[in-house]
Image (cartoon, rainbow, N blue to C red; front, side):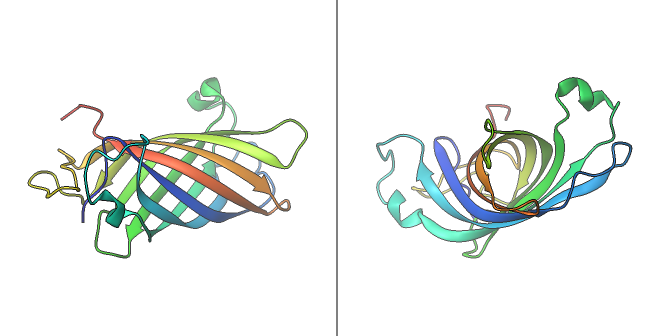
Length: 173
């Protein structure tokens, strides 16, 4: 499989299920999320690689779990982010990845809309070198992962979200 990195954005659409907020002194599963991704969308409006359009596909299943930490942990000083463990599984034998990181979020004013941001470390099975265009060489299997979500809370337990994410080796290898 090959991960489109560098200037690549991917979009995910999915549903999230979560219960009431966990107890303040417990490390508990807060949400389970499942969705599908459209991969291979370029960040810039121009296409640097001819043939890249064939790599745009609704081809990846995404799943993630969000855990809430007890109050008073070191992460309390970082705004109480959730622990995020998740991954992407390509259904077309392209790149897949697993990740672990932190997710911050908040409601938009007094509306059912919410925003989230995620920073994580990821491992991929993507091509490290020798990729044929329009695929790119990832360079190393360890990636930095960044995501932004815009969501709408349907009820206390259900939400729908749109996600934009980017994975890159961040010039570390």
